[in-house]
Image (tube, rainbow over all chains, first blue to last red; front, side, top):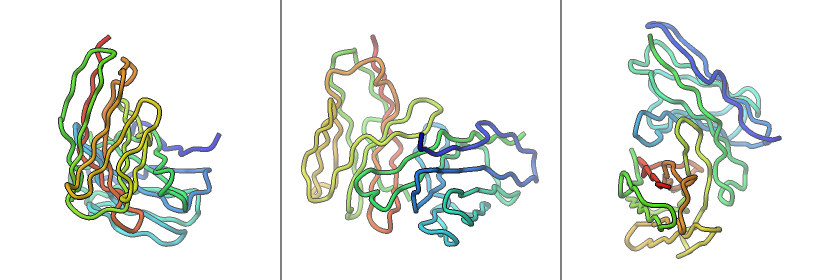
Length: 114
Length: 110
């Protein structure tokens, strides 16, 4: 079945550590996105990529980094520069016909700083 | 910055009743989309309405769009307990980026 896989489901980070969240899709979608969701709030865009080897900052990119070396993969690194990283992270993708079908989301990674 | 704002923030109804959620936005858009999120899960795309459309139906869902008022509504008819979730509107203005509102938490009581 086609879809987006995010791993791990739960992740614990110590202060000062970098951690990487995985996002893989087998939908052959061109565009991929990372969103952050805080409790009781909407989604805020961190980074997005519309094509391999290219990505753009979203609204809250500080303290995060991404890469897009393969069409299927769009990992997100939460660096130690991100002061409040505890949140629910969602990855999404969209085909070239996304205007018709919307985004497809993964099931999320819950990151907690301990 | 958040473009969409949902109203109400929370809604509690009985099974079989209709649920209406509203969304307002600030700038011109290409389309507006509604998503559903069950607790602790990813979002699921429900319906998309383009800026030149005024109303769209999908099963028990009805979406309206008023571009002059920069607002949209989502109506769920004959609600079921399984409809309990958070519902988000999202607007696409340009560049395939979606901007999400803060959502409406719908509770349908059996």
